[in-house]
Length: 327
Image (cartoon, one colour):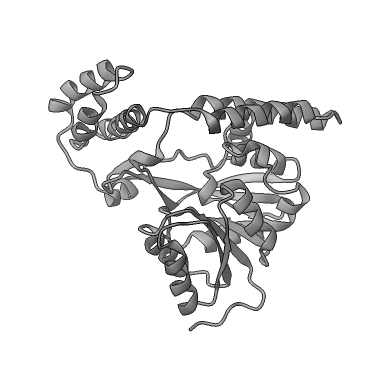
């Protein structure tokens, strides 16, 4: 059993709710980092599967893992719990199902060390489908001006692939629970008030997409919340209260949380999304997902058109290694 670091440089933070089937791969990706001076804070957010048992087994084998067990409180509150308990100088985010490449922590820590004005460092990511299909890469946004422009348009770092300074996080008060379905963009905008945000050009992370995890029902609300986060930033910069904005944010989040949705429709939209990504890569596996999307009137015509074109346009199988080699 390894010894816990007395003074960890990094606190890797993750929240888990019923993620037992994916936990081993994700945890292993952190434990196999080339940078080893870290603690791994994992919040079990009221899981009802075998997640806690798996976490306890890993914690017994590696004392860098610290488990926080609680009743289900949601991602935003769980992240705050872990981040405010962090002993490291930096927090590195991680989500269940995603994987950090071995050099991720080392690369981000070196960037912090050489750029004292930077408060958050992201990285590019490989996107992976439910069948381990490559869905492409996140764009290269390594220039300062690019990130500033993205923030001003309500976009930011890949949340789960980011690291940030604990001191800056605590200075701004952490995540705001009002933005619980868009907590990341609000965090990036508030961190931008105390320092710079950067995304490295290296590809150091993989993000897994699942049919059950892709939903179109929050996209419009997240766009609204991003605009409200920008409005909140503007009010604070002018020394004005943003309480009315936060009231509006709560209303949007409460409405989306309570709204009734159609699981079949959401599955069709998710299949169409994945099929479209594979279509762009000319991967013949697009047809499986486009056929599954045909049950939705919203995307039927687009899915059918792409399906027909794919018969001659999409004839290869692309691997994750090919995507990374071509980057």
